[in-house]
Image (cartoon, rainbow, N blue to C red; front, side, top):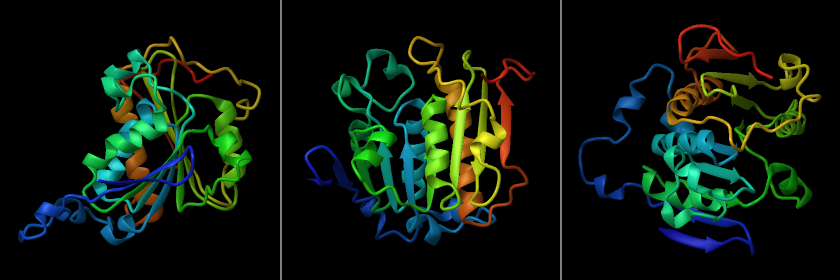
Length: 249
C-alpha cells in the first residue's frame, strides 16, 4: 500500500490491487464482465465522489473498489463511534477517528485494481468552502440528512449525475433516486426536503441488512448510468418487510 499526504488533513491512497493474480490465465473480472451491459474499461476509468462514509457509504465503497473503480473520492466530517461497528466498515482501531480517512484506509485491502482513493475529513459543504475539487463522473449522496441532499443536488445540477439514497427511521424502508443532468432533481421528487432539515441520526434504529440492500441498488444504478446495463426507473423504493411501511419524512 502506497500512502502519502495530499494536504495537512486529506489523505490519498493508491491501491496495488490483487496483483498476485497476474500470472494466472483466469481473469479476476471474468464473471462481472459477463453481465450484459457491464464495461470493465469504463469502471476502471471512472471517478466517483462518495459523500458519506457511514453504513451506506461503506457498503457502496466496498462494492466500487471490488468492481475496480478508477478513483474514489470520499467526504465525511464525522468520527467513528462504538455503535458503528456492527454495521459499518470500521474496526476497534478506528474508534474516534475520522470516518472518511478510516474508510479509505480499510478499502485498500478490498481493492481488486489500482484504485486511487482520496479521503477528505470534511462535510461536503465544508469541502466546497475549502475549494476542494469535487469534479467527478458520478456522485453518490449517502448522508442521512436533507440539508446535504439539497446542497449536493444544486451543486451538481445540470453537470453531473447524482445518486441519492435514504432509509426510514425504522430501518425497514429504503429508496434510491437518480438525478440526471437536465432531468428531475432531488427537490422535484422530495419537494418538502428543504423544509424538513432534521437529521435522524444518532440514536435511531440501524442494521446491516437494509444497508446492503440499498447499496446493491446504488451499485447497479452506477453501472446503468455510466454503462449499458438496462434500467427503467430513476426512483426505486423498497420494503424489507414486503409491504408499505413508513412514509419518508
